[in-house]
Image 1 (cartoon, rainbow, N blue to C red):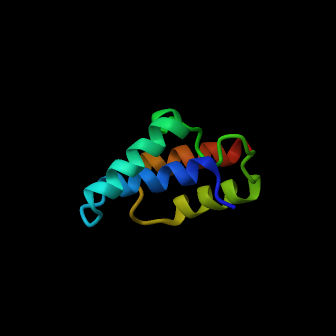
Image 2 (tube, helix red, strand yellow):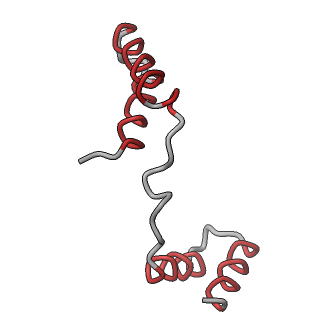
Amino acid sequence: MPTDAQVAGGHKANINNPNTSEESKQNSKTVLENEFNGGDVPKSGDNEEKNPGNVAGGLKATLKNPNVSDEAKQSAKERLDNM
């Protein structure tokens, strides 16, 4: 079942999609205004704790990624050390 954030995101995407009709875009604008406070809804993961294992894995991947700056690698290392 999609969350409110996902439904609102779909309507926002529809509004910005050049391949959808004006009627469809107007419908999405109406839905956002009437049901989602203009599209101002919390992100789908705002109320959930992050999985520490996934966070650590992402930080480790940052350390090994050759496309990441030294500054970002240092920040990731510090965050890993503090876990």
